[in-house]
Image (cartoon, rainbow, N blue to C red; front, side, top):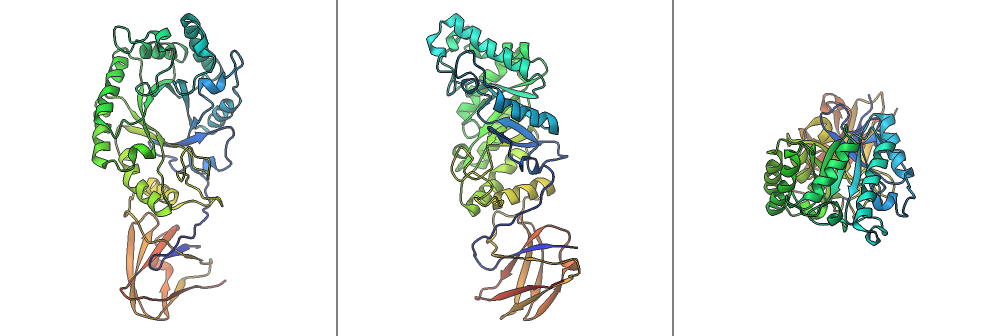
Length: 398
């Protein structure tokens, strides 16, 4: 049997590891764990994710930047990849004031209404098997410039929103329709405003789920009980929730700690049916340091923790000292030899922080791998000593 054991001593600087992956992290789970695809599909996407959101190329302003000239190629790449692999595909988004075609403001109200309906219709014709669709993005913060053309406030206060969902339901009757917004899970006031819209749509059977953006600027520094409380308020509608845009910043240690702190709130909430992380490749994320792989392509600690947590359900501890060296044992190896200049206690952890066991060692201690290591995986040793120590770990050779 072959083990990969990562060793830590004191507060060292991390040396990252490459892991051989073959299936999405949440494969076989009741909830999906997805990510975004931009212009093309990354070769390692299926090693991690089983849900697809087109990051920018499903937005009207990118598809029809020039009037009546539809640029579907990147959206088609993401859609066909999801279809081929059996992954959930979510369209993002039909209406968003931040990215609308530059020519729309010059049209009459009637023409504006015709154009947005045409976009929804053409999308449905090209991508009929869409699983989910964000009909509206950020209606509280960035409504479209043409909202008066599609109903304005009207008698409900949100007639333009109702019109948009009616059209989406008309052209995509088998797609689950969602609304999406930011600054919700960190704000009771915004949650209440959001629920006003959601309940209007629910009364008309126009909405199938609620999207909550959960970017770093929303979560970092927010009390976790506030996040859970606002999720509970949304869940009281009876509609499923989707964490639609999740990311967290930080150096390796801080990002891992933040994932440990916030991600389980969503993953363990019974109403949350899926989480979409907003990018993972180095320098390919919207916000600096939110990527989950480094410049060499190696997984950062947050991603290693994420896989272990989703796979095992064990959250572990908040943080561990970083490890500096690794030992790869060979098939005929059944022990590690540990040379220490002082007697000490070594603690063994899984990479997610879950403590496995501890052992006492002296100089030239030979430690059997079985039953020390319970199964294949990445493990971390921590030296429990008040004094400065020097450890040398020797893996046997084939």
